[in-house]
Image (tube, rainbow, N blue to C red; front, top):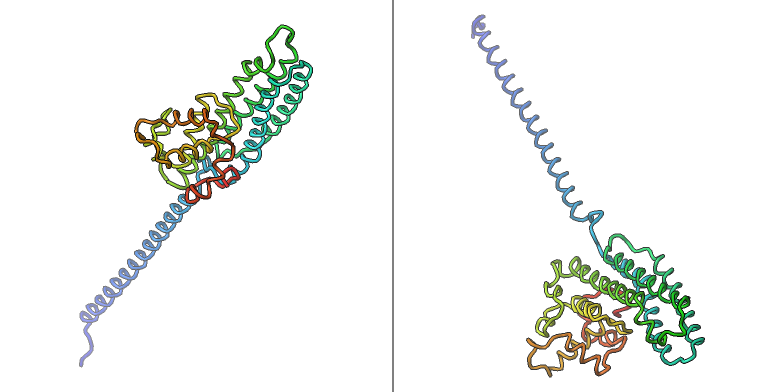
Length: 310
């Protein structure tokens, strides 16, 4: 074989250079594509992590209604107020028995002192911002106690020599009627908070629109959850200005018992308010009725874990 001519050598050299640049371009392109792909994968991974974090981390100002919020409210707001309410009812009943004005004033002084003590306790409770309805409930109850205290304080500035008996005078005082209304409103907000809790953690949907009504037929009542029923009975207590030792859930269990008895032949016509009037007339309501039946009738129902229900 002869030696390559100068022309042949240039042709071979050109081919080698062409192959070299082609291969270099291919490898460089592959490297760049790999880097772009890695960048895209990393970007996608970061986006997935961001979405995951958004799903698992609660929004800072979003209402949460945690179990711990209800326990805190129960012990530091509701329980002291419930004790006050029982004392208030007993106070009015005792006034009607006492005939001596000095004894009546002494009893009123004790009630005033007790009211001031409960007001300080409830006012000092720290309710989490994550449960705004519980905060509003606390505010209403604080205002209720303050109104009661103002009314009791005013008794000692009155000329009682010409006034009607205290047992009749006190319930009619503007401060007392206002205190009752605000207390019942605070109570209603507490039960409304439990409906919100149920929406967030149990049903994961809005509550029944029926709870926006003032009264329900038994057929409508039967479609509600137990938390919605308690809200409706609390609403009736506010509407009818009923101050009692029994609670909203105690009315609920009695209405449910009436329904389960099967004595009502026209559930589409009978209303829950008419049953409440019947229960009151027959003195069938008492504190603790719900707790007596909770393990039997409501063991599989979703309720906030507070001593009120277990």
